[in-house]
Amino acid sequence: MAKFSDSKILFWLSLPTLTPRKQTELIKKAGSLGSLWHDFKANSTLIKDSVGEKAYAELLRYHDEDYIETQLDKLRSSDIFVVTVLNPIFPQTLLQPEVDAPLVMYYRGDINAIADTCVAVVGTRACTAYGKDMAKDIASDLAVGGVTVVSGLATGIDTYAHTGAMDAGGKTIAVMGSGFNHITPVDNVKLCDKIIQNGGLVLTEYKPDMNATKFTFPARNRIISGLSRGVVVVEAGEKSGALITAKYALEQNREVFALPGNVTSSRSKGCNDLLYEGANFIRNGRDVLERLNVVPPKKANKEQENCEIIVDKDQKKLYILLEEGTKTYDELVVESGMSPAKLSEALLMLELEGAIVRTSANTFEVRK
Image (tube, rainbow, N blue to C red; front, side, top):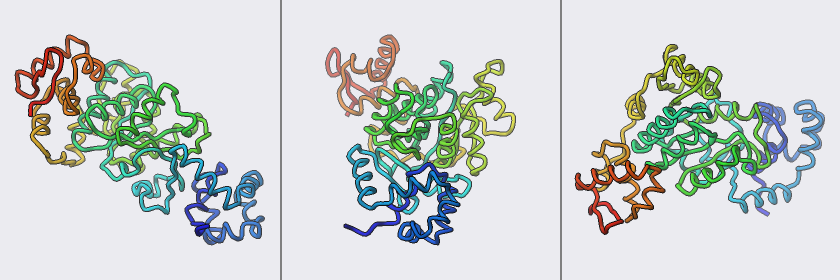
């Protein structure tokens, strides 16, 4: 058997429910990860005093190389992977002390997505039509600007942020407040799969069988902000969890952006309060890009140039869909989510502008 690595020892240490700080303290007391593992039984008193009898009993039960290897193999067979702080691909922005990052994280998808410029887009679950549209538009602007959108896979603003980024051809990262076997809400299991299929990443600090609780959701918000250069709050009530993310962002020295809302709406009070207290005022995702000095990626070809000069968001969405290949009118209705009337109008304008061509009575493609 290959050498039992420090990363595997960290995985073992993460199996009981111990906070990152408690794990770090235990490692320091033991002297090193190797000493903690190899001298575990000899240091039983020290360990019990540090983590308690229950956690010690769990660590003792799992203290077996074959057991750890088997658990890691089971995770991989479910397309769930583990990354520890000792791995070079661990998100470097999370190593900032103020983040208090977990020492071990579970993920599915492309872990390299964390190396991109990331911006979080968050807000209330009970969003209005205004919040929904703006979340999608802002995420779309960020994606077109080459930014990876981070959010929490919750209903409402989170869902529309993830969707808006992918609809624009961009990547998105979801940070969950539960394990992979208990994705919450259940309706977003398909969204989770779609994020992965589109080259994105789904990340959590919680073991696969961990259910979400009233504590895990606020805790995961520190990771959402920690991964990001800035946090955009689209719509939030006075006690919205999105404000917790904004608070973490300030503690972690990230930029905080807020979208103004109706001053009489309870669902916009959190955003309006943030603006009153000095958060960055934004009207769209382009304002965020400008504030962060993010330069959009260079245009690689004529099709991209055409897309950049299309200002109307509906037209841009259709153009991006047609870049994938020839599509029928019915396919565009389903994939764009537009009403037939709005779709027909947008297609007509793209044809008049010479951006697309009608290849038959019912099919369209990008003009070559």
